[in-house]
Image (cartoon, rainbow, N blue to C red; front, side, top):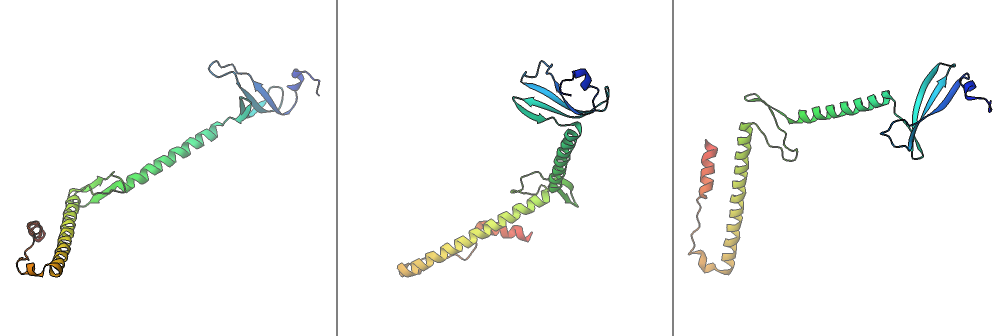
Length: 176
């Protein structure tokens, strides 16, 4: 069997490897292909796999099934991810209908005008409350320091119990 001619090898059955020369001009000359095939007869050949050799390393070429399944898996993953992201951005208000919010997740602000106005009013109210608390604390500290270090000044200074003008405007807005 070792000294048979290549014509007689075509009559044998079994798995064979055939070197395919590189005839493409756009591919580098260091690459060539190897076909793994099952020979059933002189003319019956079933292709099993294709390998390519690049700079001395043998790689198995992907088949159509592997390529399509990989691409479809990637595509379905990305479409699913897009639907999940879209689902997070959907907003619904009975009075205004559906709307979309594509702002970042860390800074999620409502895009429905009524919710936006409500959020701004709430933030303004909280800001005014913090200012009022801070000014009350500062006033208390000043009074304590005056009692301790300048008790003669306490009778001369008048303390206002009326609220700050900004607080009056805010109280009017709350009642409306």
